Amino acid sequence: MNFPFFLAKRITLSGQRTFSKLIVRVTIGALTLAIMAIILAVAILRGFKGEITDKQRGFFGDVIILKNDRNDSYVNTPISLNSQEIAKLEQDPNIMNVYPFATKAGIMNVKGEVEGVLLKGIDKDYDQDFLSKTIVEGETIDFKAENAENQLLISSLIANRLQLKVGDSFIMYFIQEPVRKRKFVIRGIFSTNSEELDKIYVIGSLSLIRKLNNLAEHEVGGYEVRVKDFNQLAITTERVNDELPIELYATNVVEQMPDIFNWLNMLDMNDNIIFVLMVVVAVINMISALLISILERSSMIGMLKALGMQNRKIRTVFLYNSLYLIGYGLLLGNFLAICLYFFQRYTHFFKLDPSVYYVSFVPMDISWLTVVWLNVALVFIALLTLFIPSMLISRISPIKTIQFK
Image (cartoon, rainbow, N blue to C red):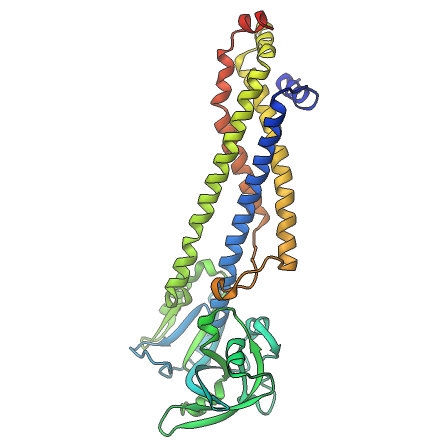
């Protein structure tokens, strides 16, 4: 029979507490708030990083293949990969698809108002899944329609500025020699909540840009490569570079937008700071509860010592008692945190200013494995820290405690 465990259970469940009752409640409350804060902080920061990363990946692709030159204009130097070269790239285990694209600077003219934009051209094989998620009105481009080259997706920012809606038409001018113009019909209106994207880009047909830039049927401005595991992006970029001809090079979305991704990486520090602060608060409360519990039951400790019980086993009794308090607090904290997590995931109740945070609601994302590891880490640190104050038991004299009982 495990006597320390039996005694700890009797003390915890059946024992009568006096002045330690309030301390125990405060300790459980502190543990509940600590694990709630840790889980929700990790979920929010990971959700936020995931949302921002997905926006950049969805709009620009993971790996971008371009001409190896010093062209800094909005119109990329034409390149071409044959079907065998593309198939070889897609044999990479981390590559899902390779999509061609091209860009063209233009000026929208709507009722005397003008707006400079960058037309991004895609073709019928392009995966429009990300675009469909950002559509707030209308639909994505229908490449089976006869007027596919005249369909256009614009952002809600541009639509509001120029007072446009789905179905409206306008003229776009392309600055070249000679100046060319095309009439477009708005097929859909999207919103990425990223002002840098929404105020510049419109989405159209790749075949139209080929005609405007006098490109051959196989020529494009670049290729977007979508990867399966974003954590292997740098390695995949290197492998793509090894397969490309010398006149081409591959970069990735992290290298293209270092400011955004460096900022996102800095957010990891917030996770660590919140974890440390919450653990410190929880541990301080646990130490206080343990010391008060020891002092409250000093007479019992003296009696157990007089009966020959070792200090080590008496410490185990109080560590079991502390483990019960930790478990109770963590159980309550996990329950509340998970309820709040799913509530926000499905309702988006808590909103954000998209002009500041790039998202319109508080995003959350966390795995069950992460929740388990956070709980295990908190329990381990708490018990390891509580072992030192439990040494106070060895300083309690059985003669004095029994004498003053």
